[in-house]
Image (cartoon, rainbow, N blue to C red):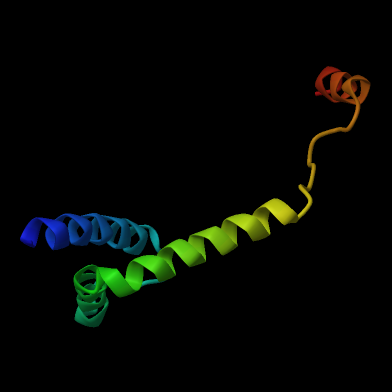
Length: 85
């Protein structure tokens, strides 16, 4: 029984910990933030669906937005920009 709870909890802990460490706005010195990481892992049956939902909606929103091109649109103009550099 512990395996069925412990393995997913460990996976969720690693996912939440990685996201927390990558977040430059989150204070790493406040204990409440570290407690949140632990609670999110312990309550993985509740937090995992939310994490998946949030990642999916973010991914779909990014796919729907048109890409902004910063490169020249034609091969000739890209050659000209290289030549003039």
